Length: 316
Image 1 (cartoon, rainbow, N blue to C red):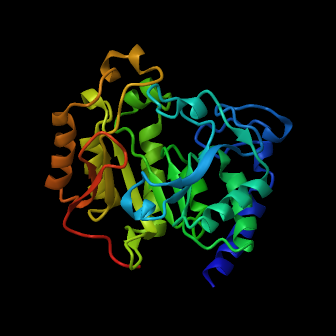
Image 2: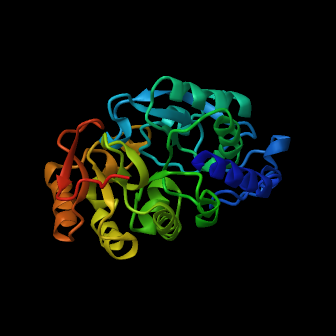
């Protein structure tokens, strides 16, 4: 029944986006280029989806990775230009391989066949239209695991709205609380307003995180907060917004994995890791605000997650 509903919603969404690549307005850049004729916009992405890698990933948050891994698909290109991007080889330098819609749907089904708990779309924003086409084929072919929309958070709320009933789990970054910082380090000078509107729409659709009997995410929102040095991310201000604008029961992943890479050494402020004190300050702020659901990282690696707070995600 759920898959039948998703198929109906996908058909409707795909019809509404049928000509969208001829004048691409699917992200906040609103370049308006004709990707079908090979024109290149800000993200440099072609009309076909470009995949860098895919496979079971065991380093995501525990409700996603579980015991069998999250079925991640890493998309190349990006609609931001983060100076410190750890995935710069494919987000900024565009490594990856163009695939057909049919092949992308086959990849999704192969990840399900491999036992992955979900399909985790990493960096999907600039390929949202192509992903929807592939999902329609994959779900018609038997795809039944939850769909995770794993994004840098620079998404149009209107495009997110079109994903309602299709995406089960949203996992956006909330990278900045200051547009000046977003503009300087990610070339996204309107990030804060755009990001907050998009995350509010995600929350409206799926609500707080819920899990199955095995503790695996079935539905809901997980907000990722990457702590940057020198308070560049302004994460404590973002936490204030989350409490009032998203909800006090939001599930957070407070990330301690930042390291200077790519062009970060061109900027003194981000040319080092956050200190233990800087990271602890954010975690303490979350607890003081009553944001008691989510994961912290005891070390500096992504898969070193520890649940904090008092409320284990409820069962679906």
